[in-house]
Image (cartoon, rainbow, N blue to C red; front, side):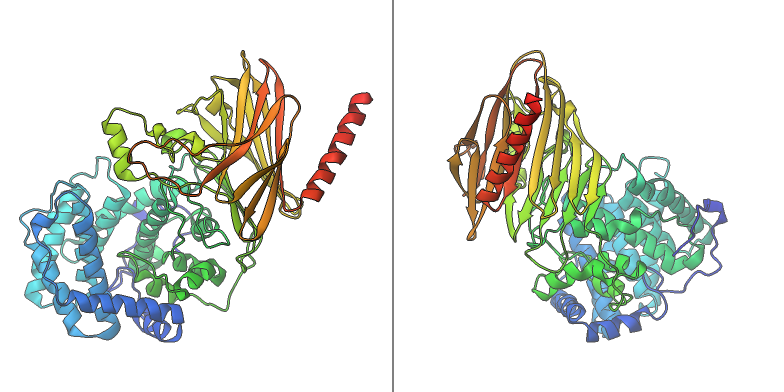
Length: 595
């Protein structure tokens, strides 16, 4: 690992600068990758998929400048082509792949300008050509190498370096790193200066964000992409400069794979908060963490996904073989069962185990409504291999755009608004958009697992305080407790979950859910006037995707102005056990009141 303590940029050493290829690859890595691809079933599947894609690319024509029309499609395709072709060449030594990558890079190098309607294209073109130039350095004809190297330096590196005093994205800094390290021989002092600026930015901004409470909100896919970019930056500095790379890696960053792992439930579905689907995918970047942490258990989920035929997608697929070749699959650490995540979208995540689809799962989310969904205080719950409390998922981007263009609020869309999420609704009001649900405490004992969420800011118009406790007992049965201090007027409090189970009201305060041959009972415990409720099908906007089979069930509690009210909902697979617990609780409460 690079420097264990912070090193200022001027202390960087280039004495051990690796020869080409130096981006992501160290001496001996290609040999290890070939062995890994021949010995590992998952790596062999990924390797074959990349090479087959590269074979198909041999028959295509290079991309043209007018294809970079403002969308990310062309830039992503360029990155995929050059990465796949370069990988296929170093793994097979077949010059057909090198020649085809050369044609692609020459075509882009001769673009009049790398500026396009999409500002990110300069970074994407610089990143892609720098990787291809570096990996194929000794196989490119001198004339082609000169043209491509000049384009990287002038149209990419110089153009972005001129904006170093402006606000550049992490993608820009990654491209600057690749460009400077690829063409360092062309202008050593200039390129070294770029690398030094990148390292300072990496330490002060990129990596520091992982241990900060202000880490930005990201959906599952966005988080994986961000971690991938950050790892590719750190890994390239390490491969090029070795111990002199000057990067200070915080412990929180090294838990990146663990974070991604906990976002996949035992059922194989992801925690699909925000705008993400619930389909779990293999993340190649996790193999870097598995190698660095000497813990192959970090990629156990990904190995299962790949072996099931679901290969990684996108331009980063070769990373699985690159990083996986350094993993010692005999070394497995004991996995933690819970994880608390900081940042603007705090979470508590729990899995009862890591080996069975029947393991239990709880995910609790804080955060802000302005992140796109009114889901502060919501939760996902799997018990016995069934997801009982669900998130409806992302609204269609086209529909969001249409609603906004029509002058309406995105909260009118079912999947964005409060009604689709497993949280509270008070007096029919939406959550306060600027409010934050804060996870203030988490519980990690065998008898009590979960989190306390202060939701007060979300309901400031109707309450003085709202604190939710979401916890599992020693058998992983769920209890959700909401302690509410009502404001200056009476409140109607809706407590609901979304589920694909079949609901049935089986008592004045009990609901039975049936799904996949299993049953789960929800029981309300609360003083005062209440009713059990199964909400009717939502009144969707014209053109909005309808969630077939989705049910919303729960309870409605009435509270007086200024009243302090507790709403407790218990989940249990046994009705008799639940009634017994309820009887004991009321006996205790009645005895206490008599005393």
